[in-house]
Image (tube, rainbow, N blue to C red; front, side):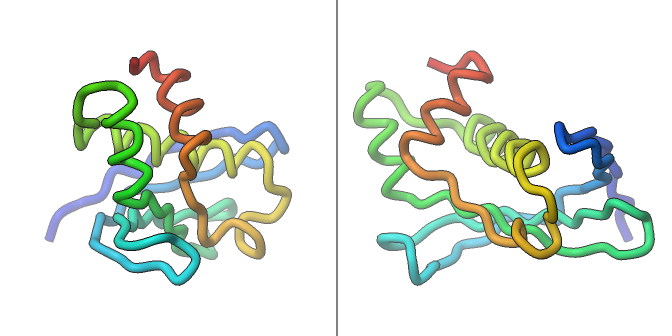
Length: 120
């Protein structure tokens, strides 16, 4: 059995989140055009209630970014963008349990998040 590394993030709403990465799997989300990768995080704000948050990154969004930048987006860069999308939700959503269980990285969002990470 492997131990998961619990990380902490303080959101702009004042909540302190603890989270860890559970895994990545192939997915097809009904509101996304085609296949995607689903990144799953377990999240808690009170150490009692833990809930899953899924962040979807569609293959089409990754392909479009790669085409416009002339190079593939590495797995680490994809994970970085997904994690930044999770942090964005921590900052913006008042109630993650009710409103933030399913997040999507869209094309313009991907570009913005990667810029924050210094990826060009």
